Length: 195
Ligand SMILES: [Cu+2]
Image (cartoon, rainbow, N blue to C red):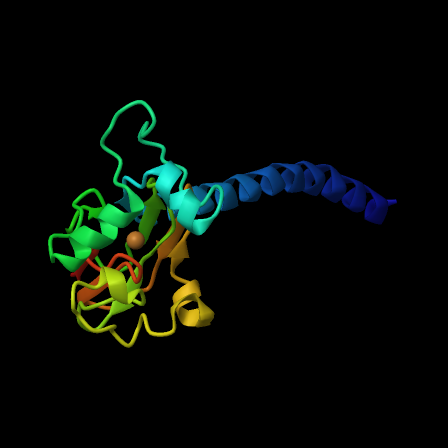
């Protein structure tokens, strides 16, 4: 009888305690997860831009290769396919093909998010030294850097490709200076300084 009373008393006491603890610990876990999320650094955005002319690019490279989102049909500032090559050969590459910003400083652990807002594909490829990409006609006389050699046939290069309208995240950069360029349009360059 006495034993039963104690057990009963115990369950009366413990049951509500348990009920109180369970939601409390769940709430604590949720709070910890939220705090961790807040500690996570906000990614730094870099945009890839270009002004490909859909008519001439797609005639050369296939339908839907160039999807200019900067209203190329309404305004006459798009660059024709042949002109892009002519300007690169004259070592005055088209400034409409650009990564912005050109140089960034981030703290170690901050991810980069590179968004392709241009009309055609680009790559965001880390290189030891800036130089030519894998299309000789766009290199302005510079030779292809080893990191771009082989083009998209090489998985390492393909992994750095950013299709029109998509994005690439770069994480885990070590402290120091890093160089990134487009392996197609090698005048698109970014220097990243990691503190
Ligand atoms: Cu490019």
